[in-house]
Image (cartoon, one colour):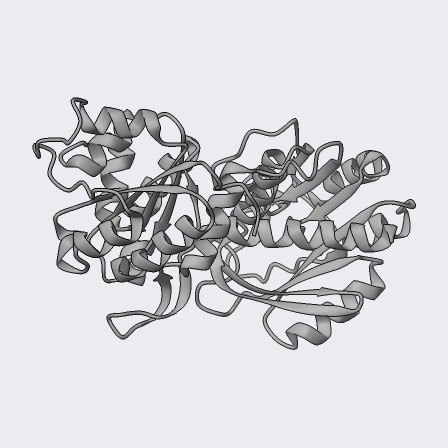
Length: 405
């Protein structure tokens, strides 16, 4: 256990979800780590766990009512907001996330959150349908842009009986996220990282093209996480639908040939190359400057030719000290194909995912993957792409450390 929490003040907001019972364990772990813990509960949260339990564990009065007479002559929500080094909301329900996103302050918890100016960490917990609803996803995106950090949610059996994403992370995992917030390691400082994202397009004519459903979200999550860890990040972006993160430098490409040219130019100067883009394997042999018209029922025969294998070319040109990461999006023989890719393309790590699985693949907020590297494999169960990005970067750094030993 690190000393990141020792002597620090953590305000823990507990909202009205069944996962509120885990808050007792979290408070206990925070105290054992040396933190002072001040608990704020919503009225609904008190239906799942009593304030007395949390007062006993935290050794502090638990605040529930905005208009309760405080023990000290202070405005309570302002005092706690000024005092806290970290504000944790666990569980964070869809309701409180919506309030946070839109600046609503109708109870002690949301009032204190609105007055707080430090790092906020949320551990979402709700039914899968609620979590994946566009309104919730929009609210999460708003909060991410403001710098709110998230731990989980995780996949598994939910209280409602469904299987899916929505489980609150376990207290030990949340504790580790708290430590990371207060002692954010800039463990990629000094590294030049290139990340590719999105899907390329191969045009037949000015209005038609061959492509795929890649949103760019996984690549963007990796770029954002690497920036937070102190890396100098170059983002090579094809067509995307996700919100682009701030990076050191951005290069836009359209076709796989353009991607190839950029990679051949940029990769020699990079320390870590993460190829999360989905380039088209084929392009049209013949293209048209005008829109192709129908020809009274006659067949249209289109010939395709292979595009350059960008990952293989990058691997063949790698220099000593570089770490190369590829992705394998498959619909069958996942691990066998990914292991072949690891060796044939001279990679250090392959992130393999079956895009046919629910909650995985193109255009989703979540992913399921297996990381395959020389000497081992690690499964990543259903989780958000932001969380998976952190797991991938951790593995990259472990690989780099292993090469130096």
